[in-house]
Amino acid sequence: MVIGETGQEKIKKMTTKAGTLYFMSPEILSFNYSYKCDIWSLGVILYIMLCGYPPFSAETDDDTCQLILSQDFDFDDEAWNNVSDEAMQLISQILLPESKRISAKKILSHPWLKRFKNEEVKCDNMSNQLSRIRGFQKRCKFRKTILSYIAGRVSDEEVENEKKLFSQLDRNGDGYITKKEFREVNEKNELGYDVDKVFEDLDLDKNGAISYTEFIAATMNDTVAKNSNRLKQAFKFFDSDNDGIIGIEDFKNILNNDDNMSIGNTLIEEIIKDCDENGDGKIDYQEFYRC
Image 1 (cartoon, rainbow, N blue to C red):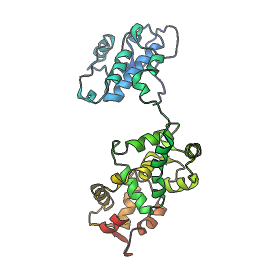
Image 2: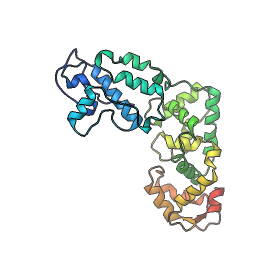
Image 3: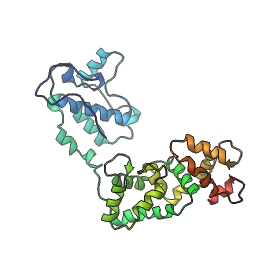
Image 4: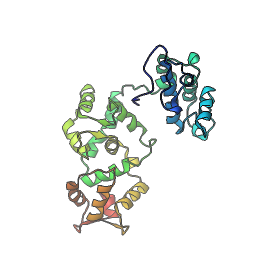
């Protein structure tokens, strides 16, 4: 997470009210605050990220101010049922009066944040997971497209290990694996991949990097990818007119209008030929399944 602006510059004491009401600390409302008001703002942001709504909100601004001044918030909503006690404890230590508020240094060492600290992937585990890339590289273009569709719709739980590996390969956390990032891991762990070839095969939208969906498509377990119900859903997705056959035109329409697919138009006719066994320019479910 990157916070562009949280509030106020670090000054010994400030006396001007500034900022958005939801994120204002009690001391800002009292016109007597320091840099620790930004820690309060981060606590509000964390609260919103975990439940979807601000900790202090009322029908009028005056009532909202009163909630802030009294630090009147709770974790009673059902949205908090799946949030850890450690996370709620951290928020409770942040949304306190300035004199009692946890410091930035202590926040960084808090047990809840430490749980998310990246650790190096063991070489053997990384090698096993990345070995699926070689199988993906051998797939026909249409099969890669199907896997890309499925990858955009699987749950986090189904690809938990693959998701963790992506985060560790994506060193700068921008949501993409660059050639430089992949090459560093490849060389460090002596994995033996032809990096340029990997990117040629996995970078389906040809933007020069591997996105999360592209990575999951190449590395997810066969049990997830070959689930019959999921394949039927994928077929129905491509069969846009629901006639039981995937034709070239509706295939083009799907690819050009779905954000998760992003396949270049020049590849579409070549892609559909991969599974068109009888050469009629269409794909039925059996051809789709065997692809």
